[in-house]
Image (cartoon, rainbow, N blue to C red):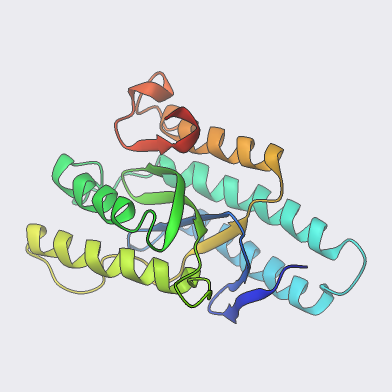
Length: 211
């Protein structure tokens, strides 16, 4: 196992190892319908069980597989859930979020992919080491992106209070096949949500492999 950079618990456990490529997602702060809350409860129970059983043979692989299935189910529902008053893909709001992600590219992390959806965000990054050789923490990266974008969006919308949900979801990319599957999932998210017919039509996604 690579050296651990960060391992902490919020509502969900977060685990970061050195030089990992990590898939992240988080959403706007809003009250979820019950069927999505049920899925989140399942994710929490999976995480809790894994903390108790992580030293058992095969526990890590089983947890990652089951967690990914539940997370995809949650994301599929979320992609089709419309908020009446906020749409991250409004051009003004989208520019704020995409600019904040690109600003830290090459500074705090290498940016591999992202997909901005109307009420949530997918982001794939590889945290970089700073001048002291210490890797930037994912929690700090997420905080910077959220803080800047929330402040700017709230100002545009004339609102106050939390804009982003406090919690975020993170999953490290295991290998090339996992990387390719994850990128494809990002790019096809707007298609599955019936926002566009083809991935290339979506204005608010990016993939490093396509540069």
